[in-house]
Image 1: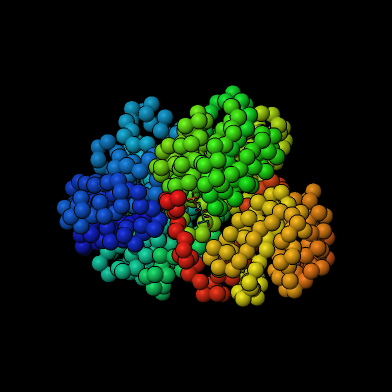
Image 2: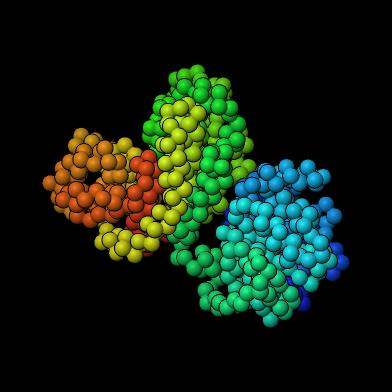
Length: 608
Ligand code: AGP
């Protein structure tokens, strides 16, 4: 996700835009740019790197004169971080400039069409398509041109747009990506988020999907895509600045948990086209995918846990043997690897030292490496042979949530592609999987709405000494992640166990009242897990179960049950993790821990 700021009014626009962008750097910070209109022409300045680079380039905005402008701080999705790919993007004549937050899902098709019409592209971005489309449809009426473009593009967008021959206007458009409009005493504003303009005004309008805003110095108009003028009520913001960066959430972690429906949708939707998977970014032909004889997944921490889920899903669908290993072990054990193998390195930051070293080890042995990475242009992304990006946007909280969920979604896509190419699933099963995959965002949203119930339960365990998680198969995979979420932010000792393994030692730790979280989402294993729950209850444990709607039999072996909606068992981890994230979060909050910056931890472990 990126940050957008725009201003039109009595004051110089550039300094206001830079100030606003500085409040949005948490949304993306690999490049930045501004377009300012001085009444006659639009000037664009942009640069790779943090916002500071742009500030220095424009002497704090002083070299860009004009009272209307738009600015952008980028979190790269399409096209590596660079000056050329930075926003704003303009048409060749320099009479139109646009900044964009979101993903234009059909940009490849539109880019091809515009090139056929003689348009020349200079960047690798999806956004540049918008600048040329606006140029193509513009006949002197900005609103009419914008609406024609909206009918052509698919995907998510928040846009700020300048037209040189309308220097006293700024236009803004929204679909799925957040956008607000502010009205102050000396001008009007657009922004991706409240923090950018809180200093200038607390009177804001939330732009809804498919609404177009026209801003003048002292006049605000809103239109539908049918060019009907809309009446909108302003909202008075009463947040303080710090709360505003978290969009009103108490912590970035909670905010990012609530972004999971969107990050899963953003990771999946652009890769489903015409009812089939579009995964050209794998850079592997169907023949090469057919030829894969073994998969090695290497990662650290939560990314490793995602890999464990990936193992079960890929083996379950594509029947390819998968080995999963923590990168710090893989890199030093001189692994025995089969020819025809494929290595997958999973990493949110793309900078984890052990994972990067493991990638280099695999490549040194002649293996192709696929990266599943969140940060575009990061070291792992650059050194992998191909990358399947998780479009989760910048993740601020040290404890990963939305990036982890996006990693699971990316692994599902890969597993389905492999299975389809190798013929291990039929068309009917593929369609069913696709349908279940596309329903996950709404189901995640539903589970997040139960946060108060989970908070109430979590408050009972803020004094716990040990909390255990257990499950079988995929339920073991998600137990690993649930346990890590709890311990890394609440500092309570926790372990995850394959449920069948408890009786080989750890069960000796179970005492009266010890909380055991039993995850049971795999129908074929329901009874086995119930047996393990009975075993721990017999020794005094309090058992919290996370299971699928309809599995009532589990209630006889549980003290507290959380139900998740029905989905394909292979995708159940994406739902079971939600109550586990919320549980860990509220235990940590109840203990007064620094949830976003837990002690001893860093967001990216760039050292061994
Ligand atoms: C997870 O909540 C932790 N922040 C940590 O385990 C993290 O997943 C691990 O350090 C790997 O980071 P990466 O995904 O950026 O490589």
